[in-house]
Length: 192
Image 1 (tube, rainbow, N blue to C red):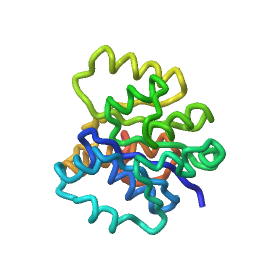
Image 2 (image 1 turned 90 degrees about the vertical axis):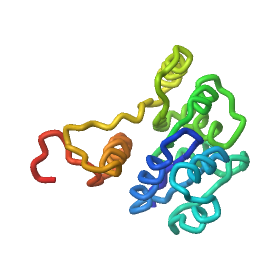
Image 3 (image 1 turned 180 degrees about the vertical axis):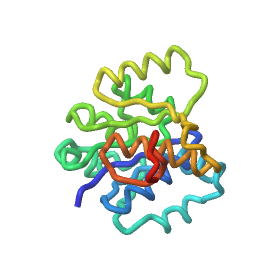
């Protein structure tokens, strides 16, 4: 079974990570890392406590804490067999650490390994406005091979709910990895 790494950090926008997890777990094995801050934001934003989240993880998913720096996915020899890494939402702290080669937790290390192994790394940054430091860090990771996006829903598909907007952003991330989904109506797609 194909696998992918999904990291959820402490940026606002936990719903993006959860929507992506829901879609990924339909057909791939998911290596999941949630930062301590990610759990705090998850509880604050959607009322989901860490222990309840951990009980709800799909069967085809392996959870790692951010402290598990010795996890199998921290090695290039394991990561080479994945489709890549998604960080959603990606905090600007995580962006800065990765841009500057600092691997102080498993999320940073997994991103570092993806870059060195030339695997896909998609960082869905959730911050606004952006400072020049953020933009410079986006430039650094982009030049190193990552794809950086700011969570920015479109409106041509006429979203009616917050979930419609979340689904659009999550779908764009999945598109980058060639993962089929029906999360949003594509431009001029009358058959959706």
